[in-house]
Length: 316
Image (cartoon, rainbow, N blue to C red; front, side, top):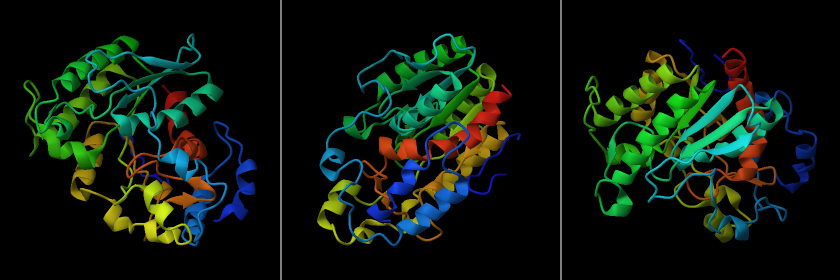
């Protein structure tokens, strides 16, 4: 069990910006877990929004793509490839936009490791085997999601990857989950049944699976909040307890991962101290909105993610 992230397998201001240059990204070097914990603690003392914030608030407020995920109307999975196309080791990122936001970090790691990185993500469409009563459809069934997921699962089975990294927006999609025909009803909810079925499938068709539990969620978008509090960034910093939505569901998901021999990561310590979750670390804006990380933050914490996943791929 790692100190900063829960892993189970069968298992400050702009003045600190110079420190970033000393932490060049490499697969097994650069930022360590203890350094990241210290950086997050120091971020609780930030008051002024740095003039060299990356990305800038103006840029962060613009629409941004995450990963290579397809749009809501797509019904067929179109793998987006990165890295070495001839590599014998394929790593798949699978899920909704909360999986896609990790693609920048995984691609950074994959480049140094000469992996073939495959993005199979779709906005608003969890990999969990459920039907989704989507908010953006007024509660109607998001049939394009179910159809897309089925083709994505076939793609993964055909690839037989060394590793699948899977994640989703628990706080939104668990509430939208409806039972799916053919999914065994062994647990107390459609969501838990769908999570277990998805984990079981991924374990059958891939060598290793890593589940990244959803990140802490803000009460309001970081860019807009900070623009109103340029000299009081802590006004935009939520408490850790408030930022962890549906904690009982989170615990159940992590338990299901363990039961299905899926490695799991709780990334909360990468974002929060024991008390609060800062939105600026050094001169990096952590959140693009309320629940997606910026590409800059993904690149910064990639070495910490690498420490978890490299041993798994290395033994795949």
